[in-house]
Image (tube, rainbow, N blue to C red):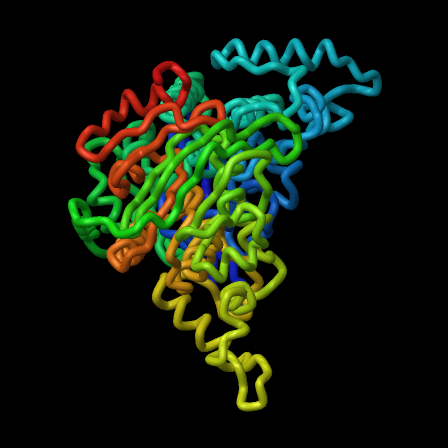
Length: 505
């Protein structure tokens, strides 16, 4: 079958790093082509080049055998290439329909704007792929899965033939993931082509026809998904076998570190209750997981425990001290570390360097000071370089701005900074979202080490496999409440999934 898209010798260099080094592969019509690699392997840069957001230093892109110049997303769209980004490009305050119109050019709508005509086209696309989208709903009121469907329809409005999907299932529940993968298969059956970027190897194998693996900016190989297995992909991605996580269960727990009693927290912008009468306890050396669909109060719960927002009722106790009225700085001094949900807005200062972001908790320490009592940037940079090496964070130097890192490397930056405080309580929200499998292994190992040292860990995630692997107990949040708790040895993925969607309690 003739390729619809060809990538020929694409190279892109940045100061101190080669992001893409002579990358070549092709995508056939009616196929799903997966792109795998560790964080910093060059996937995001390559996709930005294909979508016209970034210009290569050398190489060609061919569509239907013809060389094309993609100088902007508009050029990519004109050549039938659409993209659904990992971080959605929707305006929360606008309705779904308004977001669709905002994305369209005048030549798409004509001089006389016709909402009815656009709405009809959207409804036709939604019906074709069995999507249910409320066009009159504001984006801020939609679930993550609904927002993703809106993004997909927005891309399909341009009649794209090649759809780039960047970490498309990172924020979806298991039922939403199944629905999404069925859409991918259906789009390919209809003759469309998909470039599927993911760290979830089982999903990749279930939906892909061909897989290209990148490592350090170069193509390691392109193989057929048929007959392939996760171990083969891991070896190609990281160049080694992964070890099994240690068994840290069955050991005696320490004193109670965290207690939450009858906690009520309002949604930060909508005024309604986001956390509704939540009670939980976490002891030293315990891993407590919270499962749930995004938007059911998990983030507000984490922010309240970290003292980033105030409750409207209830109490939070950390090692016997009430903390709901304390400042975030005071809670930090009590030994609380926080890996937030939104790494770009809350976890990092994006224009700051890697070094500056890594010393937020330690710059006042004597070990960071010069003999005159001032901050020593030489010591700060050495501290940052050590963390970059130990946590396998790929960046040109400690002076690289955080915004220049891939999403996975940004996440590892936060994990490294927070774990280096040797916390008594770690609050982690979507700990390994967008992180490659090699780094996930390392992060999990570090958390298990912290657990063995007596750290109490509250892990909030939509990744059930991660929760089941790590947690001593799992509480499921739905509608702002912990509707059911599961103990280790009695985990049932189907029951947990039903509780997450409100079908069981």
